[in-house]
Image 1 (cartoon, rainbow, N blue to C red):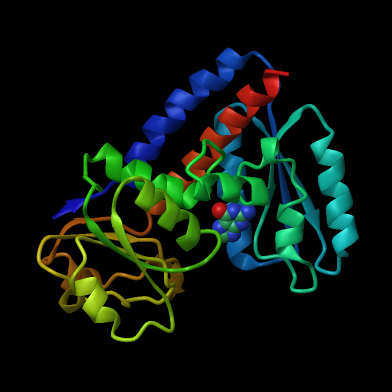
Image 2 (cartoon, rainbow, N blue to C red):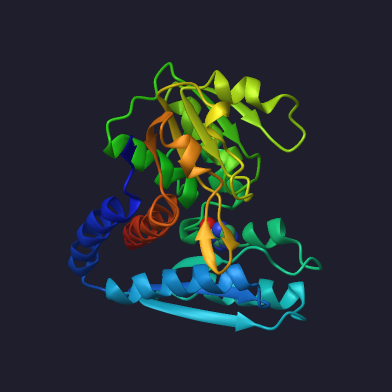
Length: 278
Ligand code: GUN
């Protein structure tokens, strides 16, 4: 079994990006908007801002309290849309439930939409047009390509249907000519689909959810889950039973997570270049 080392691959990508950003010869800022105090968000945001610093980019955190009104979030996005130094705007999800998240994402100028969550980015991706692409799905495809794992004609069982992971990943996989089955919490007989898949991608958020007996011999397993067990970060995969069955496996931590951050910075670089054209 081969570990798909997202940490190593992402470090290579980030080293190259550092040079790319330096060659732009201009100030690049990423605005991160965080509303409330979600614990997981605080971890993600910290790691995103740390990487910005390492790459010589300004990461500007706008931390708003949990009672912030939707209009205030929209007003901040509007201000950032018009700030020429801000090349990317990231609105951390989840937002407090009183705020219409999709409306806010869609208020971000698509040119600065480094998460690929605006209607324009989502639409372009669905149409197979060039666009800024949601970071976790983009990172998964990049990791598979780095290890020369073919997707064409392969059957992929994707367990997630969210706007952030499942839906964009579905579109990317079919663009790569994979045959994709999208499973979710209401899927009956999930094992039927996982056992028939060449590649299983699990983003469920339940520790030990994927067991070896759910997989066919020699399958490729991408673990997108993040849970905390006794203070330790774990994925969806039961390592004991899966590692003898799988040909390739992503670890948690050190698999998909670091790839997501690398893709965010790649999107920021693309966004910066595109905005410089005008
Ligand atoms: N919440 C969990 N993952 C993400 C992500 O990739 N981007 C944003 N904005 N929020 C998230």
